[in-house]
Image (cartoon, rainbow, N blue to C red; front, side, top):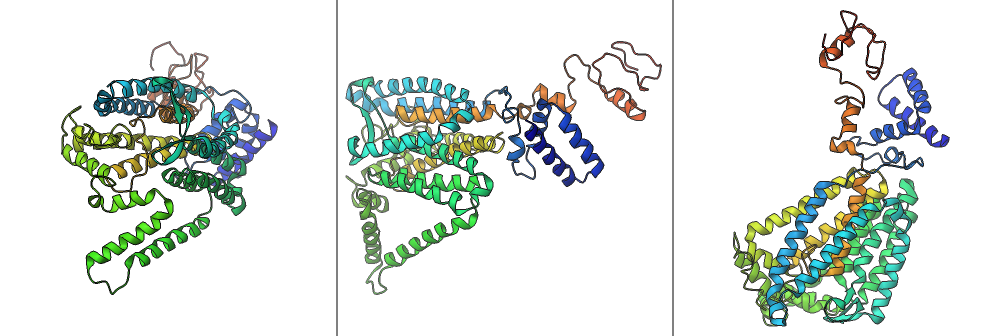
Length: 527
C-alpha cells in the first residue's frame, strides 16, 4: 500500500509541475496526498484519470480502490446502451416474426421460428444480466482459457461438425423442435480473440506493445492459427472478421503504426497484381470480350477458395444465372427495391412467400426494406449507429484499460457484422453468411451477442458515476452540500471571499468568521 501511495505521490508531483505550479505548492500537495487515506487517493485518482487533451490517462484511472485492494461500489449500468439494445432486440423479434411466418406456415408451424427465438431472447436477457454482474477483473483471469477452448472447438468442428450448404461450421446435437442444439465455434472464437488480446495488451503494457515481439508476433501467430482452422471448414467471412478484429485490437492496444506498413504494402500489391492480371491484353477485340476476360481472371482467383467461386460469379453478374447462382441476390434486390420510401407495410412483404431464400436469417434486412421502406431501414440503421457510438463512448470513458479494450473490440465486432450483412443484402459485397445482430434467426448467436452486451454494461458500471451528474459529483463540485451540511449561498460566498475565513465546513452548524455583519447566526435566516 505504501508503494501505491508513493507512486501516486510522484505522479501527482509531475502533474502539478506540468500545470505550472510552484515547487513549494508541489511539495505541500504531495505531502498532503501521502497523508490522505486510500479512499481520498482513489477519488483524486479518478479525477486525474479523466481525458487530458482527448487522451485517456489509464495509469491514473487504474489507481482506484480496486487497484489498491479495497472494495469498489459499482454504479448503475449505462442506460442509453441498455435501452438501445432492448429496443433493437424488440424490433428484431417483430421483424423475425413477420419474415418467418410464411415459411413456417408451409412447414406446418408458422410460429415455430419466432417462439424458438423468443425463448432464446428471454434466456439471453438473463445471460446479459449475468454478464453485467461479473467483474471485468474476473473475465480477464479466464481470457486465455477461453481462447484455448475456442481453438479446440475449431479443431473439433473440422472432424465432427455438421455440414450445411457445403461447409462444416456447426457443432451440436440434432433433435426435434427445441431439443436440437447447435452453435458455430467461430462465434465463440470472435469473443475469445477480443478478450485474450485485451488481456495480452494489459499484461505487456504500453512499452511492450511498441515492440515486434509482444505487439505484433503473438497477434500474427494466434490469428493465423484460427484463420487456418476456419479456412478448413471453410468459413471465409469469419476469417475476414477475425483478421479485422486483430488489426483493431493491435491499433487500440498501442502497436506502433510502422508495423502496419507491411500489411498495407501487401494489400496494395495484391490489388495491383489482380488489376494487372484482370486488365488483359491490349489487343482485345471488344469491350464485352475484355469484361469477360476480367471475370474469368477473378473467377480463377476465387476458385482457390472452392465454394466462393460461384458466389463471386453471382455477385459480379447475377443476371448470368438468374435461376441458380444469382437467384438469391436478384430476389433480395427485388425486395429492397419494392419497399420504396415508406414500404409495403408490416407483414406485407411479397418476397418472403418462398421467393427469397434465408428471408428470416441472413437476408432479413431485405424483408425490412420491403415492409418498412427506405425510411424504416434507415431508422433501424440509425439505432445501430447510436448503439455503436455509445459503445465507443463507454470505451473512451472506461476506468481500466482492459475494460476499454474489450468494449472497443465488442463494439467493433457489432459494427463489422452490421456493415457486412447490409452490404451483402444490397449486393455491395458477395454473399458472406453473416447474420444481422439481434434480427437474424439463431439462438446461440443471440446468446453470445447479449452476453457481449452484458460485458459492455459491466464495464459501464465501473465508470465513475459523476459522468451521470449524480449527487456525489454535485457534492464534489460544490453544487450540493454533504450530508448534514447546508449549501452556501452566492451571497455568503461573496462575503466570505471579502474577509479571512477561519473555518472549513458548515458541518458544525455555525460559523465564526467575519462573513456575518451582526456577529451572530440564526438558523434559516440570511444576512
